[in-house]
Length: 171
Image: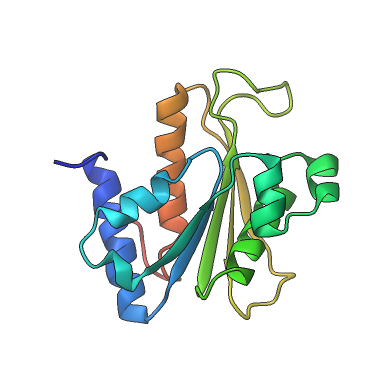
């Protein structure tokens, strides 16, 4: 028995196997997913070889205190923005020994959406240790109003895909 759907477990297994083979450690900075990505990874035996740690920074205060996201970034761009996700990923790397960080921030609903950022808006960022910090890998996705659980599970899938080593496919 598992908490997650089969496709998520299969993807988490690939994340663990491929990152272990590459000798890579990963760190997560999760907001709207509340630790679900780490949870999916830890469903896989051997995940301790890959998962260095996870940060659940649901509030803006936590993003600032744990990941060094500047208040100016949050105030100017909002918690659900490429700038914030990128700062979260960079902060996760800075506060860990991991090789790659993925950050997730979004609006799972049912409240909190706006015309410019409706419910179902989720932003992802990936940062790799010692990479050029100007080389931003971030994406804003619009999942639509799939319900809170549906949005969060879609975000887990996308985050796991971002944790696959370059050149590895999700399938």
